[in-house]
Each structure stands twice: as C-alpha cells, then as structure tokens.
Amino acid sequence: MTRTLTLLGATGSIGASTLDLVRRNPDDWRVEALTANCSSRELAALAVEFDAKLAVVGDESCLPDLREALCGTGIEAAGGPRALCEAAARPVDLTVAAIVGCAGLGPVMAAIERGGTVALANKEALVSAGEVMTAAVTKHGATLLPTDSEHNAIFQCLAGNSLDDVARITLTASGGPLRTWSKDQLAKATPAQAVAHPNWSMGAKISVDSATMMNKGLEFIEAHHLFPVGLDRLRIVVHPQSVIHSMVEYRDRSTLAQLGPSDMRVPIASCLAWPARMDTPLEPLDLAAIGELTFFAPDEVRFPATRLAREAIEGGAGAPAVLNAANEVAVAAFLAGQIGFSRITAVVEDTMSRHHAAAPGNLDDVLALDAEARAHAGEILENFALV
Ligand code: NAD
Ligand code: MG
Figure 1 (cartoon, rainbow, N blue to C red):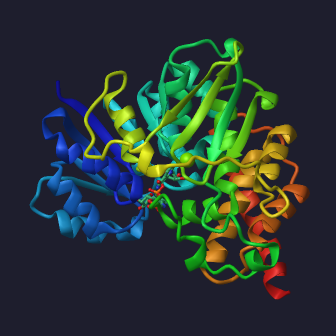
Figure 2 (figure 1 turned 135 degrees about the horizontal axis):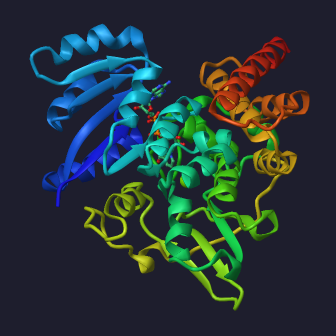
C-alpha cells in the first residue's frame, strides 16, 4: 500500500539516508513535501526526482532561486519558517523530522498538533521543548517514532513492555573521534579533527556534538522524555565499536540489546516500516570479523557535557532549552574558528549558570527562551573569544 511522506530536512545526512530507502521502494511512498534551509537547487532536484507536491526553504531569501529551479514542474514552492510549519501541518501518513537544531521545533510541533506519526531525528527539538512536546503528543494523539539510533534501539528493546518492569536503560556512546585525547590535546582540537567520526557519517553539528559528548548529553535528555523511567534508571556507557546501539535491562536482570551496522538507514528503515519490517541494502552484521566489543565508563572530567545534561534535567524548568541553545551557538562558533574546542562546553556551563528560566508552558515560551539563551550565550562567547 502506498503511504504519504513529508521529509523535513531533505538535503541533510538523515534526509539523504531516508531518500535512499524511499528511492529503493518507489511504490511504497508518495512524497508530499520536502524541505531544506537554503540549498534551493539541490532541494528542487530532489522534489523533481521524488515527484513531491511541495518544496519549502526555511530561509526565505532562497525562495526566488527555488521558484526559478521549479519553474514549469508544477511543484509548489514556499519559503520561511511559517511555510515550514504549514508544510508539516499537511496531512500525511509519516513525517520524518530531520532538520538540525531548535529550528525544527515549530515544524515538529505542527506535525504533532495534527495528530500525525512523526519519525523524530531532530533531537534538539525534543530537548528544548521537553514536556511541552510530550504533552502535545498525548493531547493530539500523535505517535513519536524515535529515529536516533540509540532511542530507536531502546524502542525496539522495550517491545511493548511496561516501563515499570525496566530496571535500567543504557545508552551506548561511541565516545567520538577524540575519545582518547588528553585535556591539553582536546583544547587544541580543530573542527576538521572534531568532525572526523570513526563510525558514523553525519552532519557537521552532530559530529561536533559527538566529539564533545554533548550528543550523548542531548540523547540523555531525549531518553528522559521518551522513556520516563527516572534519572536513576538511565545511564551511559562508552562503547567505541558502535555495534550495540543501546540496551534495556529488566527487573529480572535480563538485558535486551539492539545490534546493527552503524548506518542510520537501519533505524530509519525501522521507522519507515513500523510496525512491520523492510529490507535495507546493508551487509549482515559479521560479529566474528568485528571480534571484540568493549565498554568504558564515561570520563566526565575530559567530557563534561553528560554531567551538564544531567544537571539540566535536575534543574528542570527551562534548563534543557538553555543548554541546547547555548550549545548550538557554541558549536557554530567553534566551526567558524571563533573559539577552541574545550570552550564549547564552557560556554554551555556558563550560560546555564547565569540563566535561570521559568518552565516554558507552550511552544512560544520555548522559542522565546531559546532566543534569550542564544543572546546570552553570544555575550559569553564574545568574552571567551577575547581571552
Ligand atoms: P545536516 O546538517 O546534514 O542536515 C540538516 C537539514 O536541516 C538540512 O536539510 C538543512 O537544510 C536543514 N536545516 C538546517 N537549518 C535549518 C533551518 N534553520 N531551517 C530549516 N531547515 C534547516 O544534519 P543531520 O546530520 O542530517 O541531522 C539532522 C538531525 O538528525 C539533527 O537533529 C541530528 O542531531 C539528528 N541525528 C542525525 C544523525 C546522523 O547520523 N546524521 C543521527 C541521529 C540523529
Ligand atoms: Mg544517536
């Protein structure tokens, strides 16, 4: 049966993996809308290839270019943040949310508010909005399918069991490309070194998050909302091979783990086919060739990000949104060569300690808090850049 699909963030890494699977199964999908931030030519080419009805750029200044590229195709073009939300609000069977950063929050909420099924890769949206998003999911009868590989693994290992029977959820972390670096070496890490992930090929922002371990921090907060077992039943273990994507231990001490190749097409396929299964073009897992799986406790002295994430949850209210906003600002500054690698988490910690926000009650509160925290992080960053 053909199902309808909207893909938010079609030109990114998750977008490309999703479209690769759709391309292999053309009869299963009809594409409603594809979106990007700017890359108008690339978006237009995808819209034509997948016969989308609508293509949207988040950056309105790129709309004339998109219009020109789609001229004569009959595909609708739109631009700006509001157009992204309108695209996400169109009824479809599945929305894949793969915009990077809090910029994806409005569109994700629009898809949730129409009671849709949303495959959520855009972790920053859930980290920022937290209870506002989970409450909207319940209120509108929406379904969230976790697409992040760890959360997808947990979702699969839970297999409909009650969270009351769960003793512990363990998120695995690769440790990133700088896992074995000393504090002094870390201070000098360049953007090129930080984005060179050994196991996963991903967009620039999440690659840096992976190097600082903030990716695991964000995922810790994400897991806290998706699988609310309480902080004492949630932990992180470093597992450099990225073969086990996460684990659920039950109260009888039975632990279920999900294993697979480190390729996002596996969790994406699980969401596309859910609750059934589909083929992927990946090689079977060859455990004898992998040989060894190793595990380490996280080192929160060299990589403080997971501690900050835990403190953000404990701090409650708007702290996770502040953490996320400050991190987005700091990662962009690091990628632009404005601050050193170790300053990223320092900017986040400083912003969190100086910004005590009330709990956001709705989407507008979250977006206002995000903007305030960004401004705050920007000021802190300027001081850091001067040192
Ligand atoms: P990416 O940078 O490769 O792609 C991001 C997409 O979002 C692009 O299509 C871009 O045009 C669009 N975009 C960026 N800013 C935008 C804005 N302001 N408005 C509208 N659209 C905008 O990122 P990615 O690696 O594909 O990651 C996407 C999301 O999925 C992130 O939240 C990331 O944390 C999460 N995720 C990624 C991976 C991975 O392997 N890449 C794994 C797990 C989770
Ligand atoms: Mg992940």
